[in-house]
Length: 493
Figure (tube, rainbow, N blue to C red):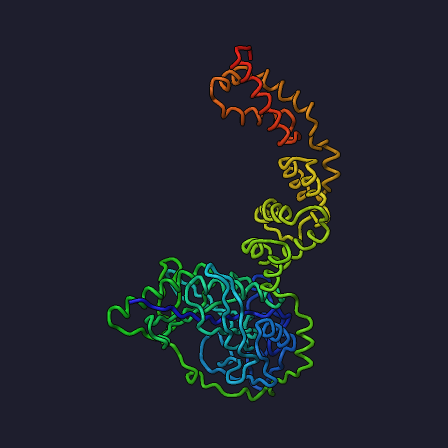
């Protein structure tokens, strides 16, 4: 039987505020402070304390909701989500339930099957939990609790089950992560848990419109893990249905070592959490003036920029996607294009994604931190475009520019790197090379014509890489043909 896969994602994104969601405790890096040092009576839920909503967190939530094309609620309600777990110091989590911050949006994504639009079910604010570290030794097992993270603002974004493959899910997750980073409200650091993905996966017969029983795969901390976990669970559900059994609704974990999902607990329903309105917080009121102000401050969004780059600069789908993955990269490219003059955009793209990206990967740096500013980069490309230096020379110059911050003109003038295009001078170099390597010349004339490339390399080496390659090719071919003609006519080589 053929099946349709239905996938919805729940995404928890830590908001990049300086203080927690309902108190003034700082949001800290776990490695920079002692465990349980960034806590107070409010985030610990001690008796007699009162929470206060972090205005910056609300604004960040509104930025995300507007960017996701959601309808903003003029009034939303915070609620207590009751469950017991060691990393939840209050014994409940302040979240939103019946009346969330925003609903009914969409996010366009790119896939190999074309562009798609994934509906957003809801966007709501809540607080994060603490962190548990499980320690197992030969003599004892114990768990350490760090509550520094408890109370950090979270934005939960819940999609509709509009994704029908692991590829769709990954494309959505990548696009959403890129959007939140672009808005400046989330670091996107999956290794540190700044953004966490949970996949709801179900399958149904191809001829059915009724969604199947879903399972939830928790805390997927990489896109690769997400794809593997979804693929594994789809395979397991198909086997279950083909065996005449029923899929059990449950919460699963993912074991990346053994590449399998495992049961964590039976799936809770909303009533299991005994939601009720948070009695210590008034309704959150968002007026239209506030929404308009935030909307006016939104930057051009990644998908819109990706579309514009294709239309405005004649880039392919993959080229535009590569340049708009990161805001700093897109701005660097566009600054270069705006000052480029006669330098074509495809040359800028080639050298950015080639040499500069290679340097970034090797150094671990970011493009907005490198020593070569767009003006200096374009200066180098002008030399290349005008054929004043060879590509080999340009690579060497750019490498030194990235290391030292020197300008292209300074290095080229200091080292005398301007390209030699004088036909007579290049012709003399070629004659010298051919006369020096008589044995190779005889092999070439005997039929080993691939030696022409070797001769080319020798000429370029003798010219210290400064000879114009096109002129060298042309003159070399001319002299080699002349020698062939002499042999064929009975003359001497």
